[in-house]
Structure formats: structure tokens, C-alpha cells
Length: 421
Length: 166
Image 1 (cartoon, chains in turn orange, brown):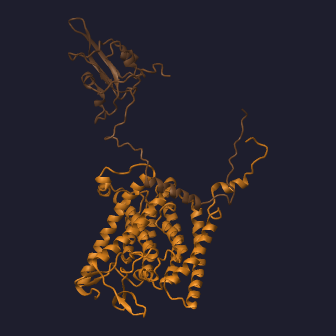
Image 2 (cartoon, helix red, strand yellow; image 1 turned 45 degrees about the vertical axis):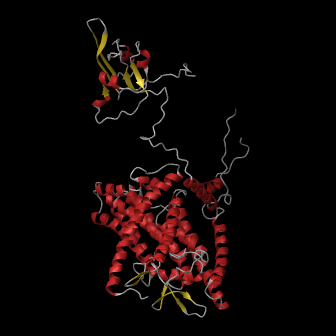
Image 3 (spheres, chains in turn red, orange; image 1 turned 90 degrees about the horizontal axis):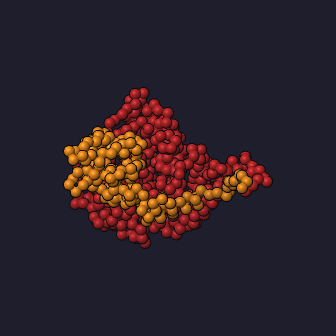
């Protein structure tokens, strides 16, 4: 079957843009509801259950409320940038979803449609570029508010996001090395070829990526920019109504993109585990599902139910990470600011660098030995990564990195002997 | 007992852990997430069981013929510590005293129950009722008709099995 082209391609692309954009907005809306319900369950409460069955219409009610509320604008705020802030926060968060493949290609009478808005050749670089733009919205919003707390939040946000972007980017380098490409469709394909999701052969990269994603999306335990108990609500202190909602949507769509990215890069994207019938990839203009023993490509047979199934699997994986985001938020307390910086620069960055060295060396050795790219190759890397991860966790734990506040005081404040007990 | 200083021994470096403690916390929250032990009361649908000693909105007892039991003796406005009862007494042609005006300001009332304790004819009572929201402040001054209309159970003021409050 041929890939779709011409006018039908244009129409299908437009349809995909509309579908994905509205899909992202709906998922974001329901993630806010999930956040409230899950946090309620964790705290032995019920959560919003008044609007519609199980509170399912709550996001709509929230939206109507946000639109109808009064827009306040502080007198001393810089008006242009005050309005620009939430827009700049929201747009990059929305745009990043364009390069994430969300299902197997769909056959139509006019040709096969890829289930991705834009399969750009720069894939991951596009995501990194746009997600780093998100910090501008936060900084501009916080600075233009002309409010001390908002400004502090913005400062923290910029420092934190810039610091963790380094670790995020470096943890991805091993993925790029293993996949040999930066497009996300190819990464899904490589994971199908390897018969192993990258979470196993690159477990430490996965760990570093998850931690950096939390920092990049400003979620607890890294919610320095908001820090309700310290900075009112940080950078969006002065925002109200729809402008506040836009910051909110931006945060949740960042979360959604990060979840989808984690699922795609490390959990095989839309790949169905332990099955090869769903595999599909454009190889020299032909849709293939793998290579035969003689190296000849085997043609894939796309079907609408395969697309549906793979989309379901992708949604499941993404949903798991969304739930994980929420779960972590309602468990862990916020780090201290110096701990965040320490973790970012003194732990994540060197670890990511060292891990790149180790993985590059192991891949080079495996290539020299002549092990073909496949399950055994992945298994060997899994072993190396496992050792790295265990070492990292052993080093990170045991009070070497994140010290409690009391640890230093105990030394400077010796206990007098002879006192009662 | 001699006063002693309890010294809290802070953990030494190397004794604490972040990751293990975090994992423990994650398991705890997961357990609650999967089986929440909810104690929330769905208020308008689920009503709280009020104690028999609950002191809430007043009500005036009425005779079988619909007259208030109040004899306008003036004891309740006298004893009221919040000064929220306004009483103007009158006398009918048979010499029976009755209240011409009997108003209780539910905003000023502190629900101490002394009016009920002091009433010689057991006319004024506090009730086991608390839902008295209104749109204006004036509506919180309950007049005689409104007090007689109330039909919630009256308070016991004290537990019959434990009259001394022990």
C-alpha cells in the first residue's frame, strides 16, 4: 500500500491536527479532574463528585467559571508581557505533541495515513527546542506581574528548568545512540526491532529522564516556581480567570507531553508488548513489519483495528505516566531550593555524562564482538545498565546526596553528657 | 518528678535515606488510592445524627387549640445572657397572660439553653436543628408565629441517664 499524498494528505493532516489538538485539550481537562479525584482518594476524601456522574462534567464547569470570571490586571504590571506570558507558556506545550506518533499507520482508500501530525526528521530536537521555550512564558509572566513573589517564582523556574534541561538532554543521548536516529517513529521501530523497550537496556537513562521531566514540568517534588507555602503561587500569583487557566493548561499539557514522550522513548510508544503483528515502519517507501531471515523486508498489512489497538496501548502507557505524575505529587514533599540545584548539577549531570561514556563503550564493544542488533544485544546492555542503576541508587540513597536539615545541626550542636534522659 | 531535657537525637549522616523513605511513602499512598477509607459525609443527602443534647433553633410549644404555651412571665428575657429575647406581655379578658410580641434574634443567641431551663411552663425550647440559612439579616429575628411553626425535635439539655453531667 502506498503512503497518502496530494489533496487527501492535506485533508488528513488537517483532520489529525484538529483531532490531536482537541484530544490534548480534553485529556488535559480530565487530567485536572483525575488529579483532584486521585489526590482525594490518597487523602481518604471523595473529591469533586457533584457535577455530572462521578464529577465527570467538572472540567466543563471549571472552564465556564474561568471564562466568566473577572480578568484582573495589576496596575503596576507591564501589560503587553503580562498578556504574552500565558500565551507563551501554553503554545509550546501544545505544539510539542505534533511529533509524537500515537498509533500504527491507518489504511484508507486513498493511501496509508501515519498516525502522527508531523513526522519531522529532527523529532526529539524539535521537542527539546519547544519545551525549553516554555520557560519564557513563566519568566515573562512572573516578571511582568511586578510582584515580588511572582518574580521569585519566575527566577526559580528559569534556574530550575535550565539546569534540568541539561540532564534531560544528556539522558536522551544514550537513547539516540541506541536508536541511531532522532525521529520518534524510528525510535518506536527500533524498540520493536530490539524486542525490548528502551526502559530496560537504558534503565538509568529512563530514571534520569523521569526525574528531569518532573523538574521540567514543575511538578512536585520540584514545584519550586509555584511553592504555595513559600511564594503564594509563584509566577502566576497575579493571574486570574482565563489567563490563570492558560498557565494551568500549559502545566498539564507539559505533563501530558512528558508522559507521552516517556511512553514513546522508553516504553515502546504504541508498540504492543510480546507481539510483532502490530509492527509497522516506512522502509524505502514501503510499509514493512520486519526483516526475514535473509534480510528481505516483509510487507506489513495495516488495518483499522491494529491502529485502534495500538492507540489504546499508547493511551494506556501515557495514562500510566500521568497517574504516576499525580501519585508522586501527592506523596513527596517539596525539595529545598539548594537541594534541587545540588541534585541537578552535582548528581544528574555527572551521572548522565558517565552513563553516556559507559553505554557508548558497551555498544562499541558489542559492535566489535559482532553481536547483531536484536534481543541478545539489548539483553547485554540491560545487564550493564542494571549495574549502573544499582550503583547510582546505592550512591544516591544513604544520605550522601539529599541530607536532612538535622544532619548538620547534630554535629555543630554537641549533646552535653550527664543530662537526664 | 525532676524536670529533664529530652534530647532528640538527629540522625547522623549515613543513617537516613531519601529513596527508601520515598518508596515507602509511595506504597502507602498507593494503598490509600486503591482502597480509600473515606470518612467524608455527603452532607445534604447524608444527615448528621444530632446528639439529643444538641442546642439549636428555638421552637415555641403550643396548646391543642393553637395558642402558645407562653404566659409572658418575663423570666427568659431576664435570664438571657445575650439579651436576644424581646417579650411584650398582655392579658386577655379572662385574666390569662399571653405574649403580644415574642421575638428571638437567632444571630445574637448563644444557644446556652437557659431560657428553656428557666421557663416555668415549658413553652420555649431549643431544638435539634441547625439549618437556618436566610437571605437577609432581618429574617433571623424569629417572631412568635415562626417559633410556633418550628416542628423539629426539642433538645433534652441534659442526658436523662446522666443528669449531673458526669
